[in-house]
Length: 338
Image (cartoon, rainbow, N blue to C red):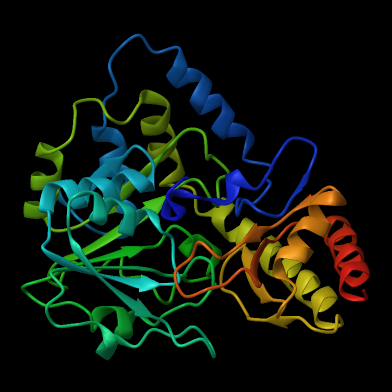
């Protein structure tokens, strides 16, 4: 049987299904980005990370020595686990499960810190002082909760590495919860991705921000040329692109309002507000039947029982556009009326 921590939304999507399971905005990506990728493909040389590192450093107001490119954001969690090998770690749940899977793979003792389910709020005091490494998402996946920068900063101290997954932060106008520009927080690591706002899941383009000493330590633990030329080119050019995230964030906000409005009129569904491009709902006692019924109707959603702290009655629904939302809402209404 598969490790439930390694199960993700793409496992539930499939050919021919209307996909609400994978939390990627369905584009379109900027036309210039395709041209950048094609040009990178035509280069006859090994990848050069330096232009992308410089561009990302400038985007966040940090020196290049505090930037490390990644083969997708997920590489960062596995690299941190294998390079640091903490004895005790805390994972704030429910959240993206790859960080815990990576830490378990190196033998770390895991303490699961559960968010408060009323608003899925982070409680910094719940994180044990013995945790040498702490991981959380902000905005959080799958709850959509946005923690304040002050609460995130409260997790840091000199004897700890605090890892914040900000892969969905581009969906938050002004990024008020981000600590990406903070070089003053001891042990802080911020992980980012181009997968979400720029719709580039297959290119595997991400990066992390940390102290120069920690970046040097992580870089020494990875294989050479781990970030391919297409990802380097995408990272370099997207780092100067502020228009796409702003446009996508506005589109997602409008479409999320439409989705939540359609779900709000359904009986027997609990919803939570979200700062990202997905929403979490609960259908008490009906989750497995709803997932199966939707699939029979050609619709895929993300059952959340593999997220620690959630059950089969919790479902994550990616934000799409009103016509797709109408089809989903009609199918949910039919199933819930039974």
